[in-house]
Image (cartoon, rainbow, N blue to C red; front, side, top):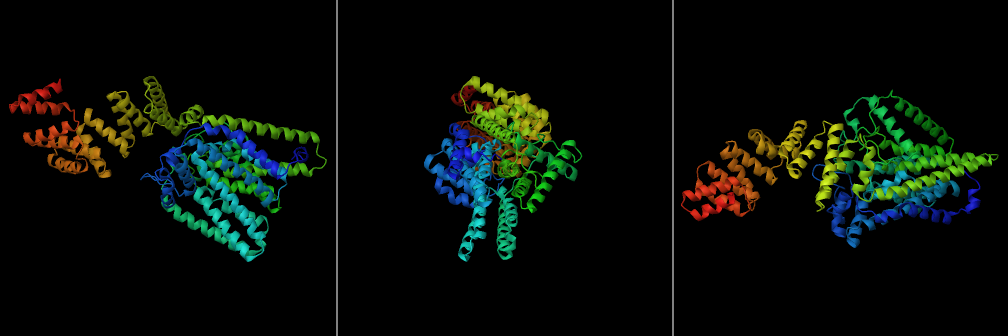
Length: 640
């Protein structure tokens, strides 16, 4: 790029590393003030294995990254182990975790510099420029600032270390060294996969590197290391994917509903264009994309056509340069390999696109641009000095602008409220972004005691749930959440009934929706329908105490007396200390005409906390008939 840069700064390895460290600190130092934010709950402070500290490491090593009984993510123990160590020595301190993330990021940036000079044999100037642009690029803010995304940084670090090990494997002459560095290559790749499985494309990039460097001319070494890497990667993926059960939903990626090749290619092209644009103009930021932020388009759509021609041209140029032994060609192909798993063509990507998806591909994108410009300008001996000054000015302006974006982004990630309230302003079409924000606002009302603030957050929450219903009228959870607000916060049963019924109509198989709708239907609507709902729920979740309670109660209320009594026996065994089980038992004996037993169970229910007016009335009438005036008066007073 600028041949005088080395002279001006006397740029060497030490000064380059020092500048890179300073730039990382300047861009991200304020992250130490941030709290926990998006997804940090299940990665850290709500992760039961992490919360055990060092004692939890055996469980971390033997369990999936996340499992709630329905969803199971893949195996990512490396980051979780670092979290467990932090928990052991510092407790749940987000500030320590943020500092550690920054330290890991600085290590990653320094490794980029060394990779460019030692493995790719670039001059210090282009290597430094690549590392500098990588360090300050705003596409990486999510990875650095989000504690949960430490997994991306660690996966990246171990990937780069595998490049160093593989390079030494071919360069060393002794058999012992080759064995050592071959094992080290495999170990680093394995640790990268165990940090996050999305580093799998690096296997293809390593193979391309081996070929580019001409190591295929030593076929025994070339095919042995490639074969070992391929077998290890395939076996690892097969084993780990058996643990994972994480379907992609249509509101995360609308391509779930499309099987035609035209939609897939067209939307893949649109996704690739998003990434290409974001590498140049990384703004605005979004904590989540999902449905309709990248619309599904056909292959003939103008955006898709433009993207296809653009990327096809870049790819062909990369292939040509690769076989001409121009390292820029390798960087271009490495970008396409690494971005492939995020493009929706190889697999459907959760959220359809994301900023963190550019962490690995961004390195190769930046490397291709920087090396291409630097090598061409350097080769032109008679290049106009004005051009060099202009390029230097452009690079400085970009680095400054990117740094400012980084610095401004840090406080936006302070916590979930600050992050989502900032980003949701330009996410009108994203159902889940609005839904997540509404849920966070609702949860906030339960954490604060100030009534005015509670009402403020609750009103905002309702506004965004309404918006969710507007943009996705077939999404049941928007209506369901509104039903919960009207049921338990606003105490408007008619509105709660409307929204619960709407949610149930859209999807009767959702357990939480069916539970709430069935309960309200029992109270204000059709008890027979409510009984049918809870009969189904009882088959699905027979271990849930309140489902068993309502199932028994509704059987009793709808004339299935014997069956209701049998179910309530199960409930009595599950929850003998709950007043509800004694209430049901009292109701059963009342229905079969055994007033003495009914009174006995109702008394126990009242003692355990029951305040049902029908119970008070039954006991008052019963004791009056028994001539026990004092006991009758006690319940009459309760009725008043």
